[in-house]
Image 1: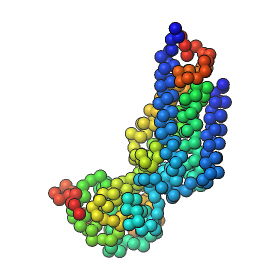
Image 2: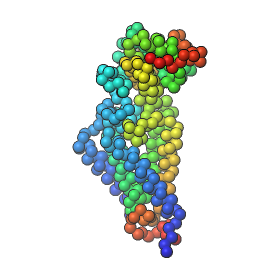
Image 3: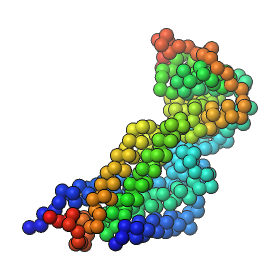
Image 4: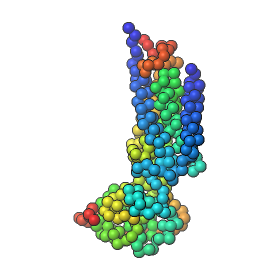
Length: 158
Length: 179
C-alpha cells in the first residue's frame, strides 16, 4: 500500500487553499475591471497610464496561478508566483497604511470590499507563507493528490 | 519541468488572457467603476441620481464653494488630527465617533456637505461618514477628491486649533440624533 507523506498532504492542502483564494479574487475583478482599476489607482503606486492594464493582467495572472496550483505539473511554479504576488500585495497594503492612505483593498472585487488595515496586510502575509510551503517542499517532485500524473521524487511517496 | 519554465508558462498564459481581455473590452478606466460599493469618481453627477454612491468633488470646485453659507466642510479624521490642521471653517466629525446633535443641526442648515480626510485614495472614513449622514436625511454629501493633503499642497485656506462650532461628543447626551 502506498503511503503519502505528510509533507505532500500539507503541500496539496496549501495549493488547494491558495487556488480557491486566487479564483475568488480573480473572478470578480475580471467581471468588473473598472472597479479594480480604481482600487489600484487608490494605492498610488503605479502611474495612471498603467492602472488600467494592471486591472486586466493581475486578475488574469491570478486565475492562471490558481489553475497552475491545481495542476501538479505546474504546482511548484504556481506556488512560487503565488508567494511573490501575495508578498507584493502585502507590501502594497503596508505602504498604503504607512502613508495614511485610507482605501479599500480591492482584494476580492468591489462586492466584498474591506478597508486596508494591518489585518489585511497580515492576511496576505499569512497566505504568502502558506503558498511558500508547496514552493519549497515540492522541490524536484510533484504530488498527485489532486489527480495528476505519477511522478518521480522521494518527497512524494514514502 | 524546470521551475523557471513553469513560471514562464504560467506568466505567458496570464499575459495571453489579459491581452485577450484587452482586445475584447479595451483598457478599463479607473473612473468607470460600476460595482456596488465602488468608489465612483463622478464629481459632476447629480447626487439624487445615485443616492447609494457618494459623489466626489474636485479640489478646485470645493475651493470655489469655501465660504458659501450653504456648504459645510466636514473633517472625518480624529479630533487630534483636526486640531493640528484642517480646512478653514471645517467641522470636526470623526467618522467612527458619535454624531453630536449640535453639529448635525449645523449640517442640516446647509445644502451641500463636503467630507474629507487625510487620504489621497478612496478615503473609507469619508465614505462611512457620508453614508451615515445620508441615513440621517442629508442627500447632497460629497467627498473631497484627494483629501486634505492635496488641499494643503494647493495652498488653499487652512487653519489649526479646535473646532469652534462643534460640540464635544462626550458632553452631548443627544448624540446620534435621528432625522
